[in-house]
Amino acid sequence: MKIISKQIIVMRKSFTINGKKVTPRKGKYIAQGAHASMGALFNHKWYWWIALMWNFLQNSALRNWMKGQFTKICVCVETEEELLEVYNKAKAQGLICSLITDAGNTEFDGIPTITCCAIGPAWSDDLEDITKHLQLF
Image (tube, rainbow, N blue to C red; front, side, top):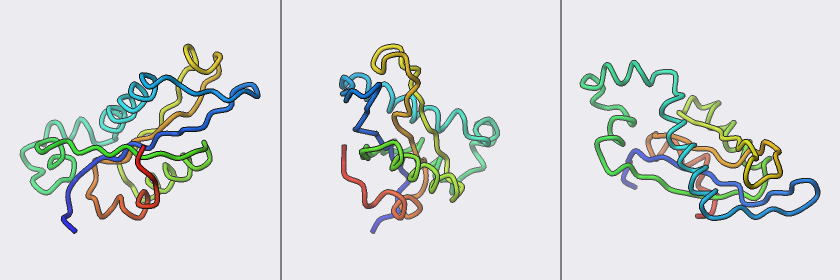
């Protein structure tokens, strides 16, 4: 398998708010995934240092990803518990990651709701154990 740098966006598909099943619009999923992708970069503890040291990071997965094709793969889980499990595994391995909680203003009856996470950029081998079992969204 070719080792590449990529980012995995994990979307939650099943939402129950106030006892009702809620199916977000496609645009909500897209916006939440974009928040997660950008959040993983901007919230990463080394982001500003990386920006300053850009030319010295020849073998960084982040640099490889940003100079390459910006590979992103969107997968899904059904529940908040599954999403948190994936996110916590990535965090425990020290991977760049971001967990997104929607404010609830448009889709979730005013209730803040965990919707998705982004993991990486990281080397594909580092992501495989955490996300290989997940289906494409």
